Image (cartoon, rainbow, N blue to C red; front, side, top):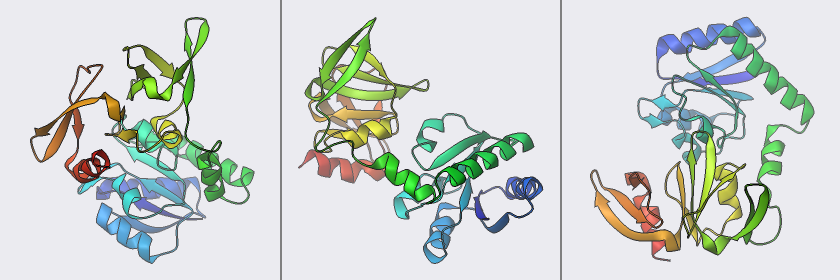
Length: 251
């Protein structure tokens, strides 16, 4: 099996490579890449590896940006010192999320998980991704069935102000500031919604157009949104996403 390692700290990369080869001597590490740019260049010029080991915080940014520049069909095992990126990681081909220092038994468990997935989906991991992403029906979702106490109620999509992720949960907030917990990721929810009506502001918030009440300038060329119902924290659009947000607002 051919794998690559994306890691900007040389000692950590060397330690991970030794641990991988200890777990399975048949695994070939074909490249060790230390930046977003190096990773994109390599992936554009070489066949896709069977598995990717990826750190998240690299010297030139978060490794999630690699997915914006090149299509990665391989499964990814994220290896990071930070636990706050776990949800976004599982939106980017992740089959496991290992915290540094990576323990040998955790690494071997992750590799076993990959083997089981590969065996179960004989056509490969890409087929699994396509199955997960295919539409559940024609058109966009019109309503969500949510639980309130022991009862279930239907909330129209037009009545939703925004979705947000917090403490490993995803919550939906309607126009009346009622909150409901959902059992889907923000990425899965986003795929079901009309992109003309909902915008993924950042990794935490997915906002309805009608909920945006004011747009303010923010330091370092970012934007800050005021939404209703109000949120007790700054809702920031990064400098990289400002242009696409303005284009979306101007449609």
